[in-house]
Length: 289
Image 1: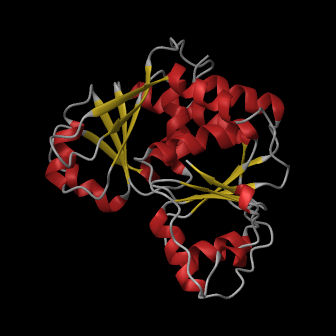
Image 2 (image 1 turned 180 degrees about the horizontal axis):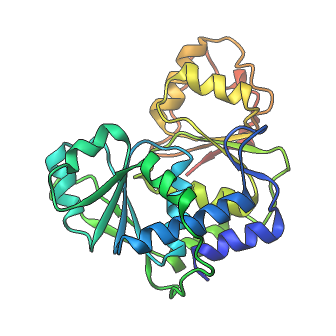
């Protein structure tokens, strides 16, 4: 099995469910698979050896991730907060990199030997491309995702996640199609973190709609939870603290939110004027990871 198997199984189980975006006009799982087939053609035509993503989280990331897997290429989402010279140094360590970046980061690669394009350019090429008929045959021990460590004590190290690693994680975490037809996950973790990539795979396999929040603020987070009727979300300590502080003891008004996955540190925040009971979530559904 490899990552395209996850997408294939999702299409057998729930092809017409919305995979990405708003519930009324989002991208279905069938459409996501077609986009991956077209995107793989774009990457193959560019003779990519590694696909690099530099940008905030959003619907283009799952499309690019599955396009990469379809083409048999690893994807390396980089920390867009790094200075330009550090980003360039990381990209140059990768095999035949092709960079897809948000507009604000493209200047980093201008005038270099590195092939780089905007997210919009990649999307335009994808729409015009002839889809690859079948996905590349990829050994399950091949590298699927490359994540770089923070480099706080030395140069960043590339962590190689193989298809077998990620498939094992998915199969031990969720069951195929086990999400409800209206379930939706709010994704606000950065793409260069394992959570940013892991949530793509688990939500696709479960059949859950993904809604992205590119730039976190407690107001924006709560607004999306309410308007998109989010049923699950993953947060880090700072996010959860800011949401609780913003509510300041008022009810959250998020009746559809059933579970929060929480990771990065112990769940220590508890305020006398804003206890967890103001979230309509039973303690058993507050998961730490």
